[in-house]
Structure formats: C-alpha cells, structure tokens
Image 1 (cartoon, rainbow, N blue to C red):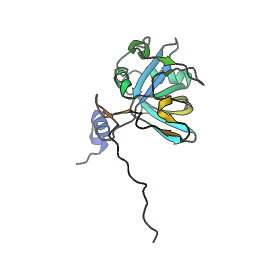
Image 2 (cartoon, rainbow, N blue to C red):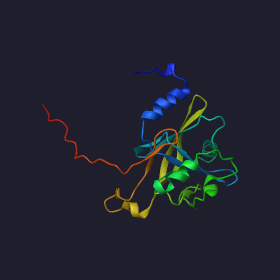
Image 3 (tube, rainbow, N blue to C red):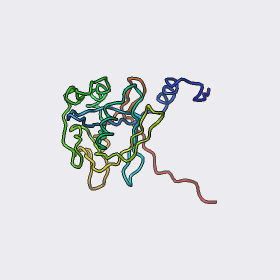
Image 4 (cartoon, rainbow, N blue to C red):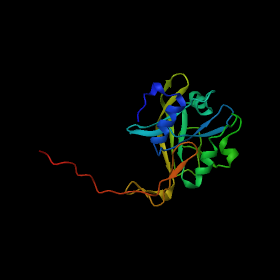
Length: 203
C-alpha cells in the first residue's frame, strides 16, 4: 500500500505520519504571557538534533488562532522544554486542552513552578529534565504552522536520575512517556540492549 501526499487530505496525512512515526518524545513547553501568566503546552512533533550548540525543534499549529506558546515565544524569544515522566503524564495530557490566555495550565492543574537560571520563563519544578531555551530560528510553514528552534542555554536534571561522574542517566529510575497517536501514550520501560555494533571487515 502506498500514498502520494497530494492524494490525501491534511488530516489523512497527519494520521499516516503519527500512526507510524512513534513513539515520539514530548516537549512540554512553558512560556510566559504579557501579564505574567505561565503557559504549559505539550508538543510531540519534537526532538533534539544537535549538541554544539544544543538545539531542539518543535512544531506549533495549525489549529486556527496561534497558540499561546507561539505568541509568547515571538514576544520574548524564550521558553523552557520540560520532559514528562509517568507521574506527570496525566497532567501533561490535560494541559493540551483548550485554555484561555488568562488561565495558566500549571496553576489550573496544580503544577509547581521553579525559577529558571538564565531566562525569565519558569520551568516545571517536578519535571525530570528541563532545558532553558532562547529562540534560535523559526520557520513559517504554509502560514499556519511554526517550526520553532531553540538553543539550550541551561539544563535542569532531577538529582536522583543523573550520575555526574559518569555523565549517564540512571535508566532504572527514569520513566519517560512517549506519544503514540490520538490520546494514546506509551511507557518506555520495556527496553532492549545490544552489544556494540562491529560493522563489516574491510575488504
């Protein structure tokens, strides 16, 4: 079975992509509005793709009016990417609902905030990992979607998850969730470990 994108509706293309490209990491992005309201919204068209400098990218839209996240980032040039683990998964999902700009998702959902170190936007205090970001570049796609690239300028890691001597995560303690499709998510504890790949001998 095969499709050409032009033969599908936008919704059908979305379903083909999100039904197979999974699980996807979720950027739980906090921003701050002009009156000080803190917004938190999840985005699963997201990933990190560089370490020098540390860069991430997520896609916002399309859903009619611009998301608070997009508007806030355009104004301030700052945001925090928070990651969610299993204890935070339901709150992360619930924050994807329709909230008016004057109601912050963290306050409404009872999520604790903590100050960032290098930007004004706060982070989610209980997130296992968070990265303070400055806008690196934005790309407008068809006038209804923004690809927002951020440069990480400070990392926050939950103490018990990280071995600072070996610079490795304690995977037995870290339980991130991934996005599937619709309202479906997955746990990530069923893992596989392979020996280092050797490659083929030279001929």
